[in-house]
Structures are given as C-alpha cells and as structure tokens.
Image (cartoon, rainbow, N blue to C red; front, side):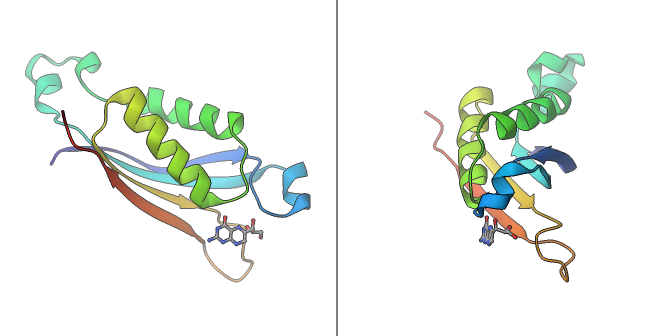
Length: 119
Ligand SMILES: Nc1nc2c(c(=O)[nH]1)N=C([C@H](O)[C@@H](O)CO)CN2
C-alpha cells in the first residue's frame, strides 16, 4: 500500500484530564501514515489527485483546537474519523505524543490504526 505521511507535526493546544490542564496550552506531536494510491497523482503530476500533506497538517491543528478533550485516546479516535470521512482515506495510523506529560520520559502517548471497507 502506498502512503502519504506526516512526521513530527508539533502543535500547541488545550488537552488533559486535570483541571489545570484545561487552562493552558501544551505541546502535542503527531505522526501520521495515510494510505493512498499515489499513482494517479504521479501520472500527470497533479496535486489534487493525492493527499495534500500541507493542507492536512493545517486541518489537524485546527481540528485539535476546535475540539478540546481530556484524553489523547479521544483526540486520536475523533481525528481518525474526521480524516477518513473528509479525505476518503480507507486506512490510517496516528501516533500522538504528549512529550512534556511525564518529566522523566522522552515522550508518552497513544497509537491507533484504523481502516474501513471500500464500498
Ligand atoms: N493513556 C492516557 N493516560 C493519561 C492521559 C491520556 O490522555 N491518556 N492523560 C493524562 C493527563 O492528562 C496527563 O497528561 C497529565 O500529566 C494522564 N494519563
């Protein structure tokens, strides 16, 4: 399967279970793999036949800020649904890091992989 990927997309957003976290912004880092057949875009060198990683990066930041939640799990799941529905993606993997959450860990977070049947 071909993929378009985004690695190390760093944003500032409100996220967290505890009350103090709802009053600040924290760093989240996203790694995404998006299943996509890249041949149609490559055939005639056309951006509109592929997934525009720049546009999707902007969308991810907007989505996270528009949908504040407590858990990384919730954000990952909702973002997966949003990306699959909006861009007609049938397979994706999202790894979501909260690098400053645990002071003696390099990073912590969640990773999900989702797919849906093509009709
Ligand atoms: N599996 C998870 N564990 C924890 C989360 C989370 O989103 N998923 N969140 C927190 C707190 O918000 C934490 O980041 C505050 O330091 C704790 N554990």
